[in-house]
Image (cartoon, rainbow, N blue to C red; front, side):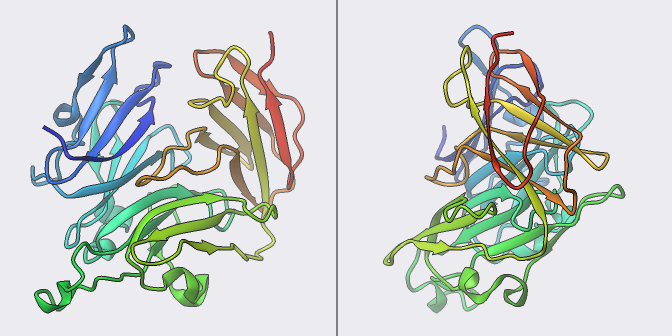
Length: 313
Protein backbone atom coordinates (compact mmCIF):
# COMPACT_ATOMS: atom_id res chain seq x y z
CA UNK A 1 0.00 0.00 0.00
CA UNK A 2 2.94 2.37 0.47
CA UNK A 3 5.99 3.69 -1.32
CA UNK A 4 7.62 5.20 1.73
CA UNK A 5 10.57 7.59 1.44
CA UNK A 6 10.48 9.57 4.69
CA UNK A 7 9.19 9.35 8.25
CA UNK A 8 8.63 11.95 10.96
CA UNK A 9 8.36 10.56 14.52
CA UNK A 10 6.47 13.15 16.56
CA UNK A 11 3.83 13.29 19.30
CA UNK A 12 1.00 14.85 17.30
CA UNK A 13 -1.69 15.00 19.98
CA UNK A 14 0.41 15.83 23.06
CA UNK A 15 -0.41 12.60 24.86
CA UNK A 16 3.22 11.74 25.59
CA UNK A 17 3.45 8.97 22.99
CA UNK A 18 5.30 9.13 19.67
CA UNK A 19 3.21 8.95 16.50
CA UNK A 20 4.56 8.51 12.95
CA UNK A 21 3.89 10.50 9.80
CA UNK A 22 5.07 8.65 6.67
CA UNK A 23 5.72 10.38 3.34
CA UNK A 24 4.68 8.10 0.46
CA UNK A 25 5.51 8.48 -3.22
CA UNK A 26 2.43 8.65 -5.49
CA UNK A 27 0.16 7.06 -2.92
CA UNK A 28 -1.46 8.55 0.17
CA UNK A 29 0.68 9.58 3.13
CA UNK A 30 0.17 7.74 6.40
CA UNK A 31 -0.35 8.96 9.95
CA UNK A 32 0.09 6.25 12.58
CA UNK A 33 -1.54 7.34 15.83
CA UNK A 34 -0.11 5.62 18.90
CA UNK A 35 -2.68 3.53 20.79
CA UNK A 36 -0.48 3.24 23.92
CA UNK A 37 -0.50 -0.57 23.80
CA UNK A 38 2.18 -1.32 21.23
CA UNK A 39 -0.15 -0.86 18.25
CA UNK A 40 -0.98 2.05 15.96
CA UNK A 41 -4.05 3.27 14.10
CA UNK A 42 -3.61 4.66 10.57
CA UNK A 43 -5.54 7.96 10.40
CA UNK A 44 -3.87 9.76 7.48
CA UNK A 45 -7.07 10.44 5.55
CA UNK A 46 -9.03 11.42 8.67
CA UNK A 47 -6.27 13.82 9.76
CA UNK A 48 -6.00 15.58 6.39
CA UNK A 49 -2.37 14.58 5.76
CA UNK A 50 -2.95 11.72 3.29
CA UNK A 51 -3.70 13.83 0.21
CA UNK A 52 -3.29 17.30 -1.24
CA UNK A 53 -6.11 19.88 -0.90
CA UNK A 54 -7.77 18.40 -4.01
CA UNK A 55 -7.81 14.84 -2.68
CA UNK A 56 -4.89 13.65 -4.83
CA UNK A 57 -1.77 11.75 -3.82
CA UNK A 58 1.58 13.38 -4.52
CA UNK A 59 5.16 12.20 -4.97
CA UNK A 60 6.28 12.75 -1.38
CA UNK A 61 10.00 12.48 -0.53
CA UNK A 62 11.59 14.17 2.50
CA UNK A 63 9.64 15.13 5.61
CA UNK A 64 10.11 17.01 8.87
CA UNK A 65 7.94 18.39 11.66
CA UNK A 66 8.27 21.38 13.97
CA UNK A 67 6.43 24.07 15.91
CA UNK A 68 7.59 26.63 13.37
CA UNK A 69 5.18 29.37 14.51
CA UNK A 70 6.43 29.29 18.11
CA UNK A 71 3.01 28.20 19.29
CA UNK A 72 1.46 24.81 20.08
CA UNK A 73 0.57 23.91 16.49
CA UNK A 74 2.68 21.16 14.89
CA UNK A 75 3.65 21.75 11.27
CA UNK A 76 4.55 18.86 8.95
CA UNK A 77 6.55 19.86 5.86
CA UNK A 78 6.94 17.44 2.94
CA UNK A 79 9.02 17.86 -0.20
CA UNK A 80 7.11 16.62 -3.25
CA UNK A 81 7.87 15.69 -6.86
CA UNK A 82 8.53 18.14 -9.71
CA UNK A 83 5.52 20.28 -10.67
CA UNK A 84 4.07 19.67 -7.21
CA UNK A 85 4.48 22.24 -4.41
CA UNK A 86 5.90 21.49 -1.00
CA UNK A 87 3.27 20.53 1.54
CA UNK A 88 2.93 22.23 4.91
CA UNK A 89 0.26 20.50 6.98
CA UNK A 90 -0.51 22.57 10.09
CA UNK A 91 -2.51 21.34 13.09
CA UNK A 92 -5.84 23.06 13.53
CA UNK A 93 -7.87 23.31 16.76
CA UNK A 94 -7.95 19.50 16.91
CA UNK A 95 -4.34 18.32 17.23
CA UNK A 96 -5.02 15.40 14.87
CA UNK A 97 -6.69 17.54 12.20
CA UNK A 98 -4.36 19.26 9.70
CA UNK A 99 -4.72 21.66 6.77
CA UNK A 100 -2.17 22.18 4.00
CA UNK A 101 -1.14 25.83 4.33
CA UNK A 102 1.92 25.68 2.05
CA UNK A 103 0.61 28.20 -0.49
CA UNK A 104 -0.58 30.80 2.03
CA UNK A 105 2.60 30.30 4.08
CA UNK A 106 4.86 31.02 1.11
CA UNK A 107 6.60 27.67 0.55
CA UNK A 108 4.12 26.23 -1.92
CA UNK A 109 4.08 28.07 -5.25
CA UNK A 110 7.78 29.01 -5.10
CA UNK A 111 8.74 25.33 -4.81
CA UNK A 112 6.45 23.89 -7.46
CA UNK A 113 8.89 23.39 -10.37
CA UNK A 114 11.66 21.63 -8.40
CA UNK A 115 11.90 17.94 -7.45
CA UNK A 116 12.39 18.01 -3.70
CA UNK A 117 14.18 15.29 -1.69
CA UNK A 118 15.94 16.41 1.50
CA UNK A 119 13.94 18.81 3.68
CA UNK A 120 14.26 20.09 7.24
CA UNK A 121 13.42 22.92 9.63
CA UNK A 122 16.33 24.82 11.20
CA UNK A 123 17.09 28.37 12.33
CA UNK A 124 19.86 29.34 9.91
CA UNK A 125 20.04 33.03 10.92
CA UNK A 126 19.42 32.50 14.67
CA UNK A 127 16.48 34.92 14.83
CA UNK A 128 14.30 32.54 16.85
CA UNK A 129 12.16 31.28 13.96
CA UNK A 130 12.64 27.93 12.21
CA UNK A 131 13.40 28.22 8.51
CA UNK A 132 13.12 25.50 5.82
CA UNK A 133 15.78 24.10 3.47
CA UNK A 134 15.15 21.67 0.61
CA UNK A 135 17.73 19.69 -1.37
CA UNK A 136 16.59 19.14 -4.96
CA UNK A 137 17.38 17.16 -8.10
CA UNK A 138 15.53 15.26 -10.82
CA UNK A 139 15.46 11.51 -11.46
CA UNK A 140 15.94 11.60 -15.24
CA UNK A 141 19.27 12.76 -16.68
CA UNK A 142 17.70 13.93 -19.94
CA UNK A 143 14.49 15.36 -18.51
CA UNK A 144 15.14 18.70 -20.27
CA UNK A 145 14.58 17.01 -23.66
CA UNK A 146 10.95 16.23 -22.81
CA UNK A 147 10.21 19.02 -20.31
CA UNK A 148 11.95 22.27 -21.19
CA UNK A 149 11.23 23.81 -17.82
CA UNK A 150 13.01 20.95 -16.00
CA UNK A 151 16.70 20.21 -15.39
CA UNK A 152 18.52 17.18 -13.97
CA UNK A 153 20.65 19.31 -11.64
CA UNK A 154 18.67 21.72 -9.51
CA UNK A 155 19.50 24.34 -6.87
CA UNK A 156 18.58 24.00 -3.21
CA UNK A 157 15.88 26.26 -1.82
CA UNK A 158 16.07 28.15 1.47
CA UNK A 159 12.95 29.70 2.95
CA UNK A 160 13.33 32.34 5.65
CA UNK A 161 10.59 32.22 8.27
CA UNK A 162 9.08 35.66 8.63
CA UNK A 163 6.08 34.53 10.67
CA UNK A 164 4.51 37.17 12.89
CA UNK A 165 1.51 37.40 15.16
CA UNK A 166 -0.54 38.24 12.06
CA UNK A 167 0.17 34.87 10.48
CA UNK A 168 2.83 32.70 8.85
CA UNK A 169 5.07 33.78 6.04
CA UNK A 170 8.09 32.12 4.44
CA UNK A 171 10.23 34.06 1.96
CA UNK A 172 12.61 32.43 -0.58
CA UNK A 173 16.19 33.51 0.14
CA UNK A 174 18.22 34.56 -2.94
CA UNK A 175 21.93 33.78 -3.53
CA UNK A 176 22.77 37.41 -2.77
CA UNK A 177 21.61 36.82 0.81
CA UNK A 178 22.91 33.29 1.48
CA UNK A 179 25.83 32.82 -0.94
CA UNK A 180 26.02 31.16 -4.35
CA UNK A 181 27.53 27.91 -3.03
CA UNK A 182 24.28 26.85 -1.37
CA UNK A 183 22.38 27.24 -4.64
CA UNK A 184 24.81 25.41 -6.92
CA UNK A 185 22.70 23.08 -9.12
CA UNK A 186 23.23 19.44 -8.11
CA UNK A 187 21.33 16.15 -8.33
CA UNK A 188 20.46 16.56 -4.68
CA UNK A 189 19.17 13.82 -2.41
CA UNK A 190 20.01 13.73 1.33
CA UNK A 191 20.57 16.72 3.60
CA UNK A 192 21.50 17.27 7.22
CA UNK A 193 22.64 20.01 9.57
CA UNK A 194 25.07 20.29 12.49
CA UNK A 195 27.40 22.85 14.03
CA UNK A 196 30.37 21.33 12.21
CA UNK A 197 32.88 24.11 12.97
CA UNK A 198 31.78 24.74 16.55
CA UNK A 199 30.93 28.42 16.12
CA UNK A 200 27.33 28.06 17.32
CA UNK A 201 25.38 28.31 14.07
CA UNK A 202 24.18 25.44 11.90
CA UNK A 203 26.14 24.22 8.91
CA UNK A 204 24.64 22.04 6.19
CA UNK A 205 25.63 18.87 4.32
CA UNK A 206 24.00 18.03 0.98
CA UNK A 207 24.52 14.74 -0.88
CA UNK A 208 24.20 14.33 -4.61
CA UNK A 209 24.13 11.71 -7.35
CA UNK A 210 27.37 11.59 -9.35
CA UNK A 211 29.30 13.96 -7.12
CA UNK A 212 30.82 14.38 -3.65
CA UNK A 213 28.83 15.58 -0.63
CA UNK A 214 28.81 19.34 -0.17
CA UNK A 215 29.72 20.81 3.23
CA UNK A 216 28.32 24.33 3.44
CA UNK A 217 29.67 26.36 6.33
CA UNK A 218 27.27 28.89 7.80
CA UNK A 219 29.10 32.23 7.94
CA UNK A 220 26.18 34.43 8.97
CA UNK A 221 27.41 37.38 11.00
CA UNK A 222 24.24 39.14 12.11
CA UNK A 223 25.14 39.57 15.77
CA UNK A 224 22.49 37.07 16.84
CA UNK A 225 22.88 34.98 19.99
CA UNK A 226 22.07 31.34 20.44
CA UNK A 227 21.41 28.70 23.08
CA UNK A 228 22.69 25.18 22.44
CA UNK A 229 21.51 22.25 24.56
CA UNK A 230 22.65 18.62 24.63
CA UNK A 231 20.34 16.34 26.62
CA UNK A 232 21.43 13.19 28.48
CA UNK A 233 18.62 10.92 29.60
CA UNK A 234 18.68 8.73 32.72
CA UNK A 235 15.27 7.11 33.08
CA UNK A 236 14.58 8.19 29.51
CA UNK A 237 16.73 6.88 26.65
CA UNK A 238 20.34 8.05 26.88
CA UNK A 239 20.15 10.44 23.93
CA UNK A 240 16.77 11.84 25.06
CA UNK A 241 15.30 11.17 21.62
CA UNK A 242 11.69 12.35 21.66
CA UNK A 243 12.22 14.98 24.36
CA UNK A 244 10.79 18.46 23.88
CA UNK A 245 12.59 21.57 25.08
CA UNK A 246 10.83 24.89 25.62
CA UNK A 247 12.83 28.12 25.88
CA UNK A 248 11.17 31.35 27.00
CA UNK A 249 12.81 34.51 25.65
CA UNK A 250 11.49 38.03 25.07
CA UNK A 251 7.86 36.99 25.57
CA UNK A 252 8.09 34.08 23.12
CA UNK A 253 8.24 30.35 23.75
CA UNK A 254 10.51 28.46 21.36
CA UNK A 255 9.97 24.68 21.20
CA UNK A 256 12.12 21.99 19.60
CA UNK A 257 12.13 18.21 19.71
CA UNK A 258 15.24 16.05 20.05
CA UNK A 259 14.85 13.95 16.92
CA UNK A 260 17.68 13.21 14.46
CA UNK A 261 15.32 11.72 11.84
CA UNK A 262 14.74 14.46 9.29
CA UNK A 263 14.34 14.75 5.54
CA UNK A 264 15.36 11.92 3.22
CA UNK A 265 17.85 9.15 4.16
CA UNK A 266 19.54 11.53 6.58
CA UNK A 267 20.24 12.18 10.24
CA UNK A 268 21.02 15.57 11.77
CA UNK A 269 22.81 16.27 15.03
CA UNK A 270 21.16 15.67 18.40
CA UNK A 271 22.04 18.95 20.20
CA UNK A 272 19.35 21.62 19.83
CA UNK A 273 20.16 25.14 18.64
CA UNK A 274 17.76 27.93 19.62
CA UNK A 275 18.29 31.27 17.92
CA UNK A 276 17.80 34.16 20.35
CA UNK A 277 18.19 37.11 18.01
CA UNK A 278 19.53 40.09 19.97
CA UNK A 279 18.54 38.66 23.37
CA UNK A 280 21.48 38.00 25.69
CA UNK A 281 19.57 35.97 28.25
CA UNK A 282 16.64 33.56 28.44
CA UNK A 283 13.77 33.67 30.90
CA UNK A 284 13.44 29.92 31.38
CA UNK A 285 14.22 26.48 29.98
CA UNK A 286 11.99 23.45 30.45
CA UNK A 287 12.57 19.86 29.32
CA UNK A 288 9.74 17.40 28.80
CA UNK A 289 11.50 14.03 28.89
CA UNK A 290 10.37 10.95 26.95
CA UNK A 291 8.03 8.87 29.08
CA UNK A 292 6.85 11.88 31.04
CA UNK A 293 8.44 14.14 33.60
CA UNK A 294 9.17 17.84 33.32
CA UNK A 295 12.43 19.41 34.43
CA UNK A 296 13.23 23.10 34.72
CA UNK A 297 16.84 23.96 33.96
CA UNK A 298 18.06 26.49 36.51
CA UNK A 299 21.10 27.94 34.77
CA UNK A 300 22.18 28.03 31.14
CA UNK A 301 24.89 29.90 29.29
CA UNK A 302 24.02 31.81 26.14
CA UNK A 303 26.35 31.36 23.14
CA UNK A 304 27.62 28.07 24.57
CA UNK A 305 26.80 24.36 24.54
CA UNK A 306 24.95 23.36 27.72
CA UNK A 307 24.78 19.74 28.88
CA UNK A 308 21.43 18.96 30.55
CA UNK A 309 21.19 15.70 32.51
CA UNK A 310 17.88 14.22 33.54
CA UNK A 311 17.44 14.75 37.26
CA UNK A 312 16.47 12.05 39.72
CA UNK A 313 13.65 14.14 41.16
